[in-house]
Amino acid sequence: MKFCPEEKFSRRDCGSCGTCAGVCTSHAIEMCNGYPIFNSRLCIGCGHCGVFCPENAFGMEPLPGNAATEQQYRSLLETRRSIRFYSDIVPSEGEISTLISVISQSPTGMNLQGITVRVVQGSDAVGRLVKPVRKMLKILSFTGLLHIIGKITGMSDHIGRLRGGEDMIFRGAPVVLFFHVPRKNVTGYTDGVIAATAVMYHAVSMGMGTLWNGVAEKLYPFTGAWHTPRTRGTKLTAVLCVGYTDLEPKWKAPARNYNIL
Ligand SMILES: Cc1cc2nc3c(=O)[nH]c(=O)nc-3n(C[C@H](O)[C@H](O)[C@H](O)COP(=O)(O)O)c2cc1C
Image (cartoon, rainbow, N blue to C red; front, side, top):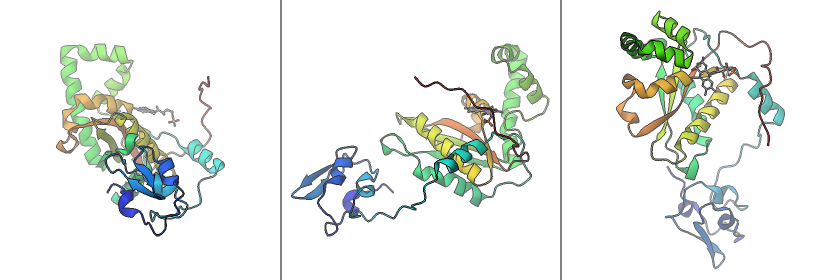
C-alpha cells in the first residue's frame, strides 16, 4: 500500500522544523503556521518526509543501523559469478520469495513501483520453456532463415547444439525469473534492471548464484508460449536464471575495463 504522509503525520510529535517540506521531491508539502500541509495529488508516496524527520512525527520504523562496509560490499561484488552449472538442490518457494523480497527496497522512477516477477520453478517447468524455441528454430530452418540468423549473430554453434537437444538457453537452471514492468512507465525498463540487479546480489548473500539471460530476453517477443495473460500490458526487462551452484569460483575474475571522463 502506498505510503500516505497525511495519514501517518502526528501534530503532537512535530517539531515544526520544516525538514519534511524541504526534502519532498514533488513539492507536495508546504509549511503553514508551523505545521506541514500535504497535497495528496502531488505526493508520490516515497516516504522521504518521514525518513528525514528528526522527531519521527510520521511514525517510521527504526533503521537496522548496520549498513555494509565498503569491504563487505566489494567482497559481495567480487564473489558474484554468472553460473552455468547448478547443483541438484532446487531453491524452495520460501527461498525464492525471500530472494525476490529485496525489490521492496528498489527505487523506481517517480516511485511508481509496478514490478512483477514471474517465477518459473523446477527443471520440468524450465525445460518446457525450451520447447517452443526448438519449434521456432525448426520452422526457421525450413525457410533457410536460421542459417542467416546464425551467421549474423555468430551463434550458429549454439543454435546447432540447441537443436541437438542441449538447453543452451537456461542451461539446466532450476529457477528462472522474468522481470516485468508496466509498459507505460517512462523509467520502466531501468526500474526492472535495477530490481533484477538487487536480486542478483541478494542471491550471492543467500549462497545462490544467477545467470543474467540476454538470450531469453531477446527471444521473449517471438516466444508467445512464454507469455501469460497476467503480464499483459507489461514489458520484459530482465531474465535471471537462479540456483545453487555446482561449481564454486576459485579465484577472482580479471578486472573489467571502464571509462571515466
Ligand atoms: C545483460 C547480460 C546478458 C547476458 N546473457 C547471457 C546469456 O544469454 N547466456 C549466458 O550464458 N550468459 C549471459 N550473460 C552472462 C555473461 O556471459 C557473463 O556475465 C560473463 O561470462 C562474465 O562472467 P561473470 O558474470 O561471472 O562476471 C549475460 C550477462 C549480462 C550482463
